[in-house]
Image (cartoon, rainbow, N blue to C red; front, side, top):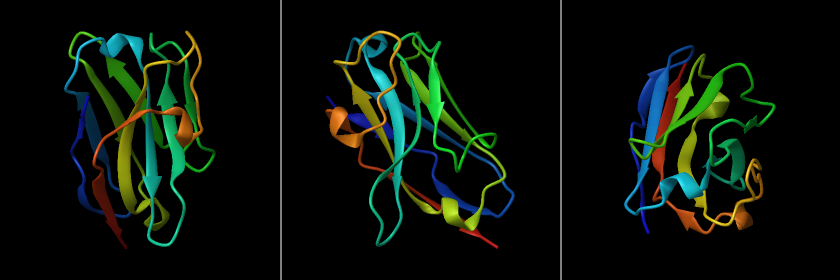
Length: 126
C-alpha cells in the first residue's frame, strides 16, 4: 500500500494551500487518515486526523481554526486545507493511514499509523 500526497509548494504567509492524498490500494474507507509534518531539526508531529467515516476529526492546537481535514471515500482521497499559513507551518507534510483504527477514533501518535506517504514540502515565505 502506498500513499500519494501532493499539492505542496511555496506560498506567502497568510496564504492557502490544499494537500490531497490518495492511497494506491482498496479499502480506503476502512482507514483512519492523518497528516503529520516534520520541520528541519524537529520531530514528526500530528497535524490533523479524520476517522474512517469522516464524522470525527482532531487537530493540533497550533492549526485549529486554520486547517481543515476532510475525506471523500468515493474518490478515495483525504484533503488538508491549510489557511492563514505561517512561517512555523513550513515543513514536509506526510499523509498516513491506520487500517486498524477503531471506528470513530482518530489516533494522534505516529507509531499507530502503519502506512505512510513520501511527504510533500510546504514552504512559507514572509
